[in-house]
Image (cartoon, rainbow, N blue to C red; front, top):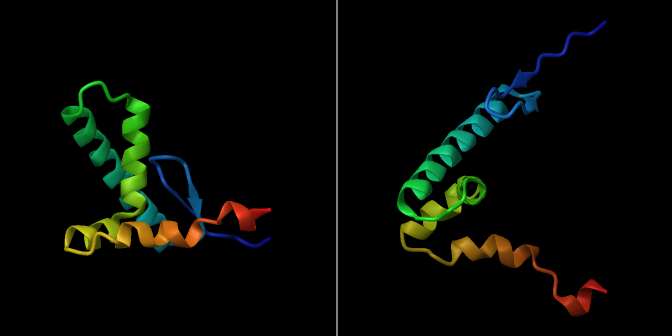
Length: 91
């Protein structure tokens, strides 16, 4: 019987076969949680779910967001442009 090492993220229970991936995921979730708190404290009426969704979105795109803040705002949309399939070609 083989033994397989796995890492479990205690924040959301995600399992990873690679320690580095698990640590990166945990860091992303920590950033998302802090962004959520920032949003909830500064935007009146935002729901907890909306804050979490926005926090996770921004945390997942943190590298492009950092580039955008350093003077390259177009980087935020580059990834989105690559994923968009025009309706006429989707058929």
